[in-house]
Image 1 (cartoon, rainbow, N blue to C red):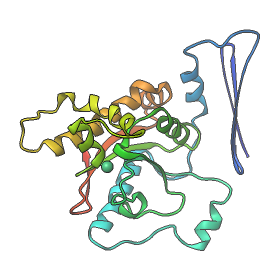
Image 2 (cartoon, rainbow, N blue to C red; image 1 turned 30 degrees about the horizontal axis):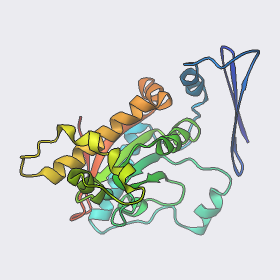
Image 3 (tube, rainbow, N blue to C red; image 1 turned 90 degrees about the vertical axis):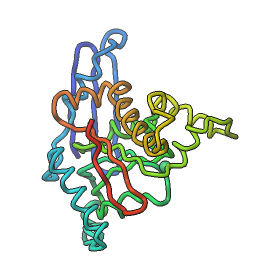
Length: 244
Ligand SMILES: [Zn+2]
């Protein structure tokens, strides 16, 4: 079991990671919680991930896997029984993906990765909701994953629905409300409106990670993690990194 302590000001965190799960205990010492101390605390608990991956190496490894997928030469790495047994007690994913729930974009398949390789959060429209961010924070600050890829894709139904901006039944309206701000800058008179919307949404959701999460912003600032946007081409299977 890994035991890591972080202590800042009057707030005391104890993180217990490993075994069957994770326990996070926060206590105050002699008073109320002090706002703004959490980010420094988390920076202290970012653990060493034994995967041989800094953010750039992680990105290279992902793109190499995607290239194998595109060329129809997958290696199906880390899918053996031996691998299954090797990671029963702990996980060290080398990359984290915030992707769309679309059935045509199955993360481990399109990156040709295996068990324990990727920490994946999928929700329609790759929306950076609070709960999605919580999972990303866990991957980065507790599991030591050093790369976050916000992965959108062409012909995304969630983005298309947000562009139509019509009332939706049930809870679906909440989803497009989180996408609509991304579309404010999209030129609706251009010839590739749908593609522009997808790319704008990827960039917007990536920005939201830094705006909404002190933890992720701090880790980026320290160079411990990197956040990149990427788009998946449903026609070819290719993932392209977006440059900001
Ligand atoms: Zn989608």
